[in-house]
Image (tube, rainbow, N blue to C red):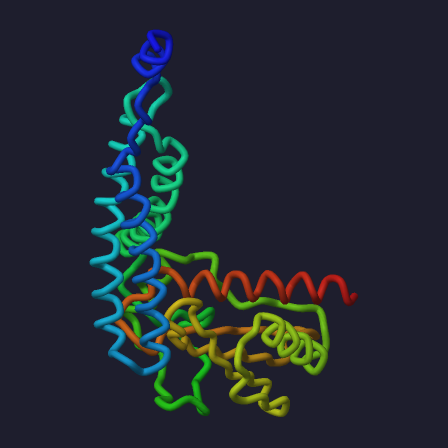
Length: 254
């Protein structure tokens, strides 16, 4: 009897779970879910894209709180501490960092790229969209100056291929990019397509122009956003990646 009482007195009570760690993980998962839902809802026509972006903004604030709570949980549940839940706290930190990293990248791009949304390799004689809902000319000298200062590397691509072969390869690369081909006119050397963003499905318009030049082909490209006045460098990045892929394809075919 005496030994049983000693055993009971020596047994340790269960270590409680860190509530901040659990709360941080739940809030972080809720933030990611809200961001994904904001894009799905816009794609399905449940709300305007501005409402979706507003929801994503509030989700980012929630992720910041989740990061704080998970950090507090990490302190509480550190080895030999009075709380358990170290793995939950670490997972909560990782989950919270994902939307915060997206928001920081978005803000950084907004501050480091020019406030334009229409980019062309030829700003003096930019390709013209003919098969898009709103065919318009390149914005003009002010946009061209901002573009040249920010993206001096975006110039026409010269290929040592016959124009017909260059056009076929240009179309093939556009299709491999997953773009939706709106128009393909070999006689004009013109390809028009749309490229949609991953989350919200925002459609950017793309045109590729292929023409004969110096015994080969000269490829120009223009990319513009349908929504918003700034593109955070997306169109320049698209042009750069496309022309690099086309140049690599042309070199491999020679």
